[in-house]
Length: 170
Image 1 (tube, rainbow, N blue to C red):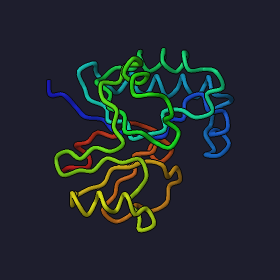
Image 2: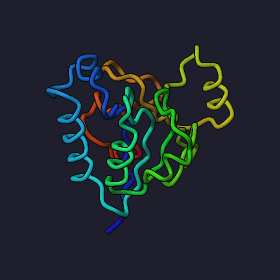
Image 3: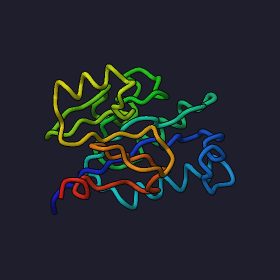
Image 4: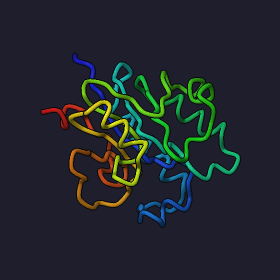
């Protein structure tokens, strides 16, 4: 069976306030975490790859060990593209089950970054100008507004699932 590559971002595990900010239908962060973990486990096989495009958590409030435990339980070979809430050291993420940690990743003519490469993000536009990707995969924008030209937003709140890379490359 062929290995799949899955994409997602902005899980915000343990982040109580994300429930109200994004109208997530959970009574609390524990219920949210359990639902997301279940969805991940029901989707991703151990030998699949997951490119996680930032914001694994936020507002941990002393729950680092709990987050590490969850990450280590999630199947797949996990690559983290750091988001604006991913503040732990690279080694912490590696010890928590990720195989790679990057600020961005350019692979197979796709640029993976947390925030979209809009005009005001000059440093990201420089990456785009250098690599000239056919697609930019990002997160950060939680709402369900229109896609930005040349981009695909994999944020959890937009899809409520992990996205198979094949959906974007066909």
